[in-house]
Image (cartoon, rainbow, N blue to C red; front, side):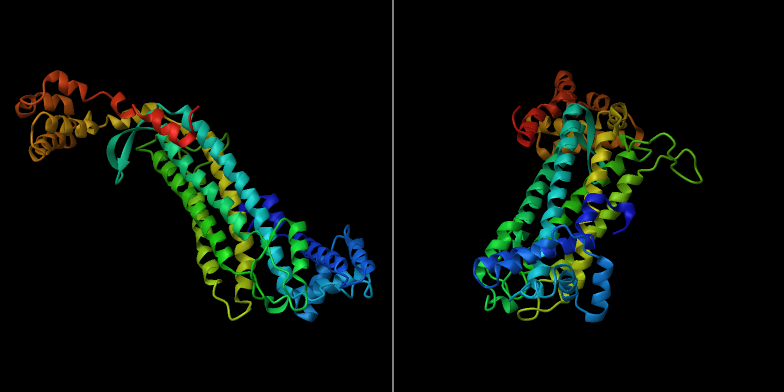
Length: 435
């Protein structure tokens, strides 16, 4: 993670100071539970809480770790420096490092998910607002990049809203699945730590006890979490690619906001480039690249190995920080996106009337013409429009085989744009609910 693509609230979750604070709370709550069970003296549990306002010295912990080559032991040693060696002798009683590491990691992921969920809610609000703003703004729909039939810009925004709403559900599900903790000791048997300690710690930290862990929390949970982030990132790219297409000079149906003083090119002063959505496409690639390592972390040796550890130290911060930045950036793009309705109409009419070909085809078949003949009649007139830029309706009216089946009035009626937008309200009700 680099500052250019980072926002402070998400970065703070992954700061060493935050991690050590979570480690401390896990250990302190565990001590409380053990004191309640009579495993350790109450005085020792209380002594641990005397460090509740301490800012743990990251540099000092790193110094100890340089000697011990063990991060949890380094932290416990530093904690004892604050609490007192005798008072701290029962800290970590019966626990193993993974109890602290895994429970902490899941707390960090749930906090990160909370930020991402809020990000998504903000993006949804922006998409909904723009969808209603442009519900009836006609634009041409495209398949294979080629003009197909009319749609509206509002439906484009609504489509992205529906996709992101599904992603909101995915994020909530991912958060729920990863919000577990484990204080089960070596190989997860609770041999040296009572299961009630785990219950107490998880309750205090907003987690559910992991039903069965080995020495680590099962990594299929984490694989599902990062897979959800990857899907969200792909949706961010989906929206971004549409905007990038709209901003092409020969299309120019929409464009990113270009601020006062902004420069598009070091060489060409006229340029207005879709730099934000291009950036989002790149960021999406990075988030997706972290899904495969998360899935490869599922298969661990026996009750524990640490092949997953180095992966998670990188993908935990990087994936969440990057996606947080991307969602916030996309929300800003949508909020300020410039839409050009006149250009949309001009683009649709570049080949006059051509986009109504299916209506004419269906009318001919309903008038008794075989589908094969109807397709032939429509296509031969449509190809003239492609080749010469003539008016499709004019060509149909001049074709005796067409007019033998359809009257001029019937042909004229097939060029009503309202035909293509008559169910927009129905679609909006499906997406946004009935107002």
